[in-house]
Image (cartoon, rainbow, N blue to C red; front, side, top):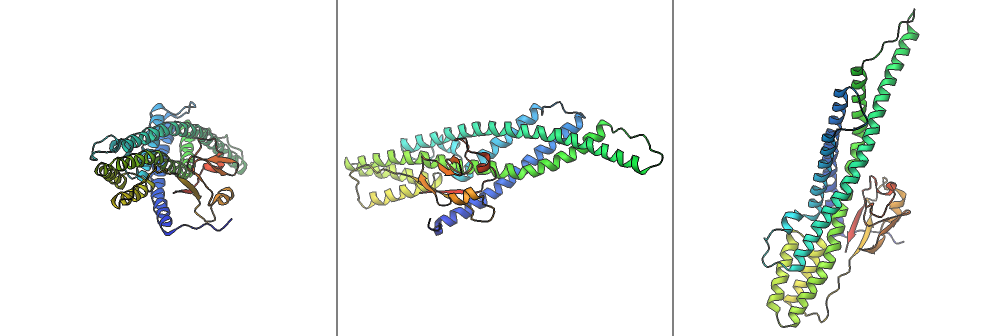
Length: 335
């Protein structure tokens, strides 16, 4: 395989995306750790654990994930997809473009619900295990400490019995340390999924929208309605400049040049989108992802990474192994 290299424009986008991801990862990690401290405080305050985290904290976790997904998708689509798609700020918006944005909005909302609930369940289950492990470790700490005292003193003294407050105080500290380690993992994994998922859905819908839009513009020109074609196109270009993907913006700009220069297409333009897998190209990249570097497929086809199929880095919709999605920092180029 020839050595894979990014163009200067792709490198710029890659660096911008990476910077945005790192900021978002840190924000989620900080929010998760704050949530974890609340969980630890609740367990210590109750002086026992009945095997279930309170509904209040369950709901709080869902809100953290949901808000983070929306913020991340907004950053990578560069607009508030729901509010913008439903507003009337664009003059004479083309129906295909407006419909496409609404479809993107609905799809992203569905992705958020599906992924958010699955991640919430997984995080809660692991946190529950962490709580039980922390309590057990705290009890073991007191047992070991008591035995040390007995072996060093003459005559042997009765072993002190720790109170529930003593055990829970140590368990709280151990739990916070464990959740602090997990915060980074959750920040990277969930941010990666939201960022690349937003890019994929936007381009996926954008391809279909552009096909319809460009076909309609071509029909207007062929029917002797160049002014109508130009108004539709200018509206779509303005929308692209404010809210659409780089892919859509590029295609619409090309179409605008064609219209302005009188290049009339005799057949509808068929826009086909391809994507390529890109890694960070450093020592931390796992072997299977290194082998996937430069893999190029149609936008509606999955990448083959190891033994798993992924529509984009972090995707688990095709039951990819967690070993291929967790902590993934890869990136996709759409063209």
